[in-house]
Length: 343
Image (cartoon, rainbow, N blue to C red; front, side):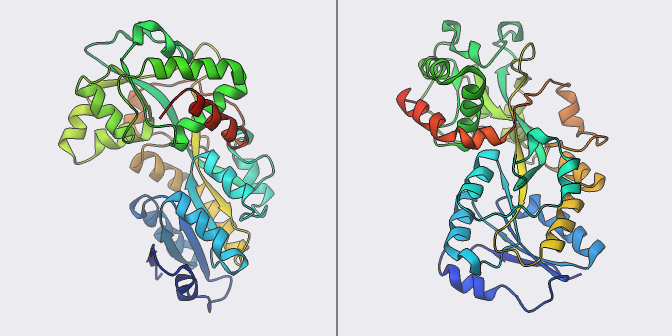
């Protein structure tokens, strides 16, 4: 089955919209906008095409750029499906009015309620945990416990973390607001900033590299980044990742904060039946296993084994907060981070 991949062009959004092949019948074609990099989604879509005969046209780009594109294209958008990361971003798409509640009830029932939109506009395909990683040679894990404990004075100048502009951190703070309230979260954010070893910069991999380099002792990162570093071809990243260990925060209370990579049907979708077939495929055991092994993300479906890397970190108790809250509380989270001088 022919697989068409469209790369993001920074000029002429409408030109691309016109370029999308719209002549095929609704049962034969599906247009996917994906914030996942091509290598993290294209092999699955190729298998989907082989199994169903449905041709997939893929556009990959940054998540925010795809959302702006969907807004700009409006009803003329050729997109049927949006795949992106973080419940906060999926909520933004919902609020922007570019999604529709056309995911079949049968598919929604397959995914835990906490991992989907409360109105059925998106659902999680995989999960990742935002954990504390620590330097094996400098930190006793018995000194760690919760996200809240990162404000303890013993971690002064020892914590690395990304900027407040990062959606993963915004969602972590939103989860804190949901559990602890705005006032307590504001105090926590100030305490965390006071313990930062440096001004926030770089991505999650950079935080792990900084711990390995001795610039800090702890970092807050998503598990799949660490898994990619351990299993990737970059020797420097492998070496750095091997110098840190995973700590699961809040195991004695609400659980470790998790988030999703998710999928939604766009407002402009013309191939809704095919879109639901793709979602069903993405929730199948083979697809869930592929994601678990290739991208080191946790399956959302029961009965699917995580990768050996994920198994090596042990089992953990995850926060069951409905992830819709992360998007709803995002504005408050950003304000709290700004007031805390979290750059």
